[in-house]
Amino acid sequence: MINTKNGSGVISSYAEYYGVNPDSGKPYRLVGYEYLIEPLNSMENRVVLQKAAQVGATVMAMMRVMWFLEHRQKSAMYLFPTHRTADRFRRGRFSVMVQRSPVFQSIVKATGAPGHLRVGAAQFYCHGARSRAELMSVPVAYLTLDERDELYKAAGLEGTPWSAVDLARQRLAGQPDSWELSLSTPTIPGYGIAAEFAKSDQRSFLVNCPLCNRITDITWPSAVFGIDGLPHRAQFGCPRCQRPWTTEQRRELIHNGKWAPQVGGQQTHGYQLSQLLSPVAKADRLVQQWQDAQGDPSALQVFHNSVLGLPYLAEGARLEMATIEAAIARGNGASMASSACTSMVGSMAGIDVGPQFLHVVIAAPVEKMCRILWAGVALQWAELEILLNQFQVRSYVIDAQPETHEARRLVAKRAGGWMCYYRMGIGSQPHYDTAQHVLRAPRSETQDALYHAWNTGRIIAPINLPSEFAEQLRSPVRVVRLDRRGVPRVDYLEAGGADHYAHSMNYCLLAMSCAGHAQHMEIYGMSG
Ligand SMILES: [Zn+2]
Image 1: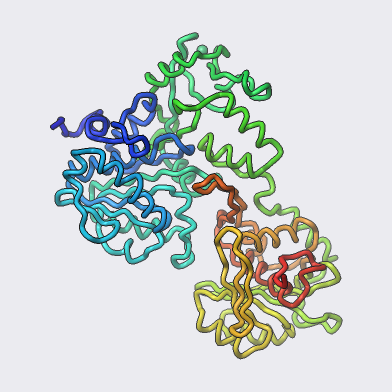
Image 2: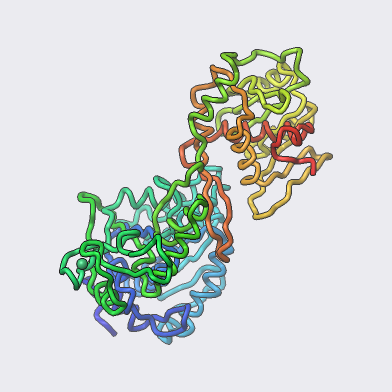
């Protein structure tokens, strides 16, 4: 048995002594991955890893958990965004790691409950963040949040993106020496792992250049030469003396590299890991990926997030203030209406149901444009009905959740209503249930259509919109992420706070689409 007192190198020695790499089935080795040694051995209570894809971070996190369970003999939870990811992890990587290691195999015991194992007296829970019951059940002393930025997609829990993380963190309550490790590929600045990293001491990996004997970091693009040239000519090299490194020199200097905090006075240790540090990184491949991404905001986002491990806000990812101002200018100084105008064919409404208010947007089609007549909040359902009647609303779409009962009562009572459920899956199709007045619409596609309508100048807005209107409409940020198979997938992240008006406006356009105005409005077509 190796020495397991607190001290440097304890967990890495343990991992190399007993651990198995689940991806190769071979003994766990840190050769080439020396940048993982410090975070692996960290005895800090809070550790944040903002990382590129495929830098070895998840296996490192598993080794930490095994050490903690065995040597601290306290319970640990490893949290994934979904039940499915957690299940795949357990059946795949985790079980390979345990089966191939005689020591792990002898100490890890099944309990009969899926996702619940035992190591001596310590419980190990490996769960998906969407299961409220699983999150509520147990106290733990070590929480690992993997694929952290995807946890936001677990927003189904009360509609607040943080609730999964918060619920899991409540499990740490009352454990004075609790540990937490968050690791994720970042998405946009100020969001998820990037927000956590910004509050940490922001460590960066420093190396000593053997050619000029100066300390440098290894960052894009300064440590890669020839990013605009032929990819096969690209080389890694020293940003300070501008001389290329041989493969051996590069491996040697990474082997001897050290993490150094860039910000003082922070308790949380944060590590930023890019693929440039990885032993399998190739300069020509990085440059090829970079060149292929030029002119494509989505591909640039993937490059920054997955290759460099950096947050990135793509051009056009968020609605510009100037676009909203242009829509107001198109209204020629008109104020919000107080009731239906006789000249109109009828108006449409979208209603977002929040915990306190009903956010309402009422609009009418004007030739190929959409004129916003009124936007505001209703405090009560009765008030909402009065509004709908006042504007002679012909078609309206309302959030089916969380007040499903009230929404159902409304659409049953007042004509022209649809309860809307967003569909999240890739390529999911819109669906009407005319008998139940239920509409199922793909979330990202409808949001793409909403912002397309704004960006192509099809919205006319009054001058006196509610003060939060613009802010809320600009809250969602469009991001493109790669799924497990490397397929790009569009998501809108609620990055700038509340986004009620963004949803009520989206529902309002869906209501126009339901009323048959989709085609010439070029908005999301629900009729097909
Ligand atoms: Zn140098």
